[in-house]
Length: 312
Image (cartoon, rainbow, N blue to C red; front, side, top):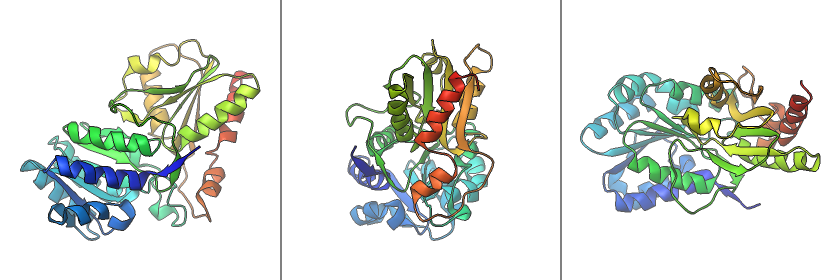
């Protein structure tokens, strides 16, 4: 399976779009080499603004730029892009419904070496609760490229969560990304696995293992966390005996919460969560080690599926 870097895909796509949409401006908080907005800076220096380590001011400036017709993309590590700037995003961007795009880079546990202070396990919850905000979590580099193009065309506040590492490519380069659509990657009649981000690849690997055990899973990439349409969701749980939600985020307020909220008033199979269980991150020598520490693995999905079918 080919693996590609999401940050690099993001930065290159932003440069491509900058040639088409002259109103795109890019703001970064002293992390342009990491977020890969340095590519935009090199291509269009007059439309790049280095805001230094002043994320709150960066969002306020972006709101002002949106008011005069620009399309501002703001960038930092996900933990800072959402947490440190929350008041400005809420008050200046979301209440007014301004056309500001927020990129949370090095999301989840993907900044494995820097520990809890730099790992965002709550960013989806913070952004999802805000009225007018769209929340996107790409599974791979191909989906990242298509998402960024969709972000330019969609008016309003948007948040995209970008993994720091290379991830296996499961989505197609073809077609346009549709905000709010769920994308089925594999069909099966026993269990539906809803996943996004890095957990899509873990779900696909788990599906292969389960198939060898005679358990057939439907793997669905939920890369739009908000808006999530109930009818879209219900299509993928028909006939299955259980549901698993896998995300690189706290199980409080993220994708799992979104799904069970939508299912609260309809009859549905039992749901199990695979995610971070009310803990902060920590540092590790590599990304896979950290994912294993928190149970964000294919093996965890396999064990959960078997237990679910056994009534556990």
